[in-house]
Length: 139
Image (cartoon, rainbow, N blue to C red; front, side):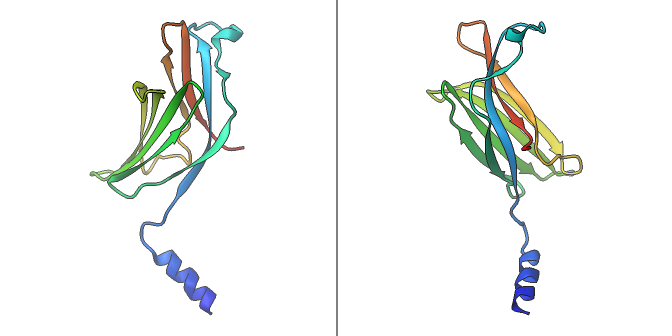
């Protein structure tokens, strides 16, 4: 009976905490659009599994992922308006903390997927190279 009451009380707690799990990976590619192998993204790090906590309404949470040459700062916010929505953002940073680029995704609570898959890429330095970070589903 105690276990049953504990389960019921946990279900009644408002604002239950949810985290989504995803794989993240840094990549690079030559700045070209052909289907040659050097024009396709190639991994420059291992694909690792991360978790990001769902924020409460009108708040946000962040996760910084450290790469070898640059970092990815993930921003996840839940906004309340006439129709509530999520903001998911990947910001790529150099090692000095300067923003290289930002990619954003907005999702209604009605249409949001379990994991906001996608990628963010920027031109890297003076080279003819693009670098980025991808978010993928966990197998």
